[in-house]
Image (tube, rainbow, N blue to C red):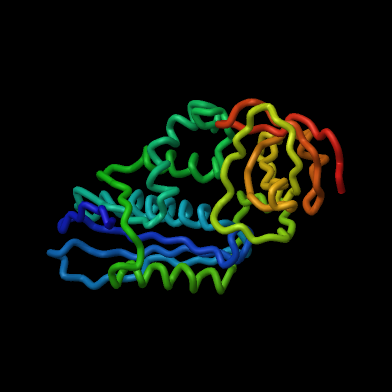
Length: 267
């Protein structure tokens, strides 16, 4: 569903991010501009920059932030009454309005879970507060029009030529999974139970809290299979090592699953 309400008199900035191996691979973003119809000017690229390592979501956010910087510097001088920033990232589009609440809540969501990429969300909110022209963030399904294909190609090209360091990116540690599980990791349905897990990836928030991605041991399959995410306090996260299996005890909050204790190190 390409749901952009296109305004022919608005200037449109198309943004896209790319990560060659998400997370942690070479990454990049790009921004293209489509001028108002009455200007009779061709679409053109405004920015293309690559980073040595990052994530797809951070690149999508950085592209959106760069577009806002452009609006801050050029928008009011152009005489425009409206600018549309167009993204195919649901992560950006579905969350940018929530960011005000996250900031007020200490960069945690309504369930209390820590928010990822608070540095970039903070920067986006700060820049938006300085704009003097109406600027909407719109979502559209990517690669359905020539300019969408162009910005996607530019973002991927930037990722192949990294020159910058994404200083806000925290790489964490990634292990290998024996069984590949398609799709993203779901929140673990914590209900105070004990379970056997094998740690796949660990990462730390600036608060010190850890995000743990793991595979759950399936009694039916007799192996580790489903992939989930939970959180852990620093003292617990410090003893959870990738590649290792543990029997752990969870809290009783499915909206904010926490590994409360390591019961046994299985190896």
